[in-house]
Image 1: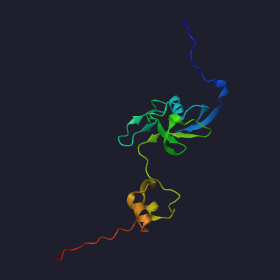
Image 2: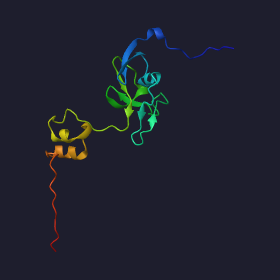
Image 3: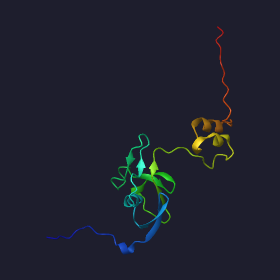
Image 4: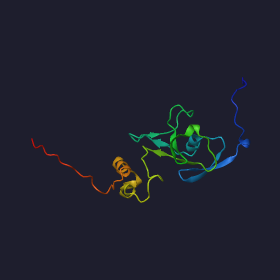
Length: 149
């Protein structure tokens, strides 16, 4: 015996097709879809790995509570994919582990910390030396204090 349902399907005809980029490839999606829904529909699982143990994760609750849907959206890490509606030209990528500090435009392109950094990342000593105007290629002076008593 059928009853009236409060469930209403979205009118597909009223939604526009959009083009987004998923892991570098163009994908046609529908306006109103979330970034997490697009990743699930494309079979792009896992959508992230955890920072400490690199455990694979995927969207779970789809309502912004569990934070399992964190991904990189338009270059911004830790974006909640389930709460982010797609828009034309959006770039959606998996998030792999912890993010590192990368070279920014605030740093001089010719600075020694940029030259000495491996994988285009900076470590704490590079940052401190840059702030103090020291060349990171030069070892800091070591002073030995002898006890004369």
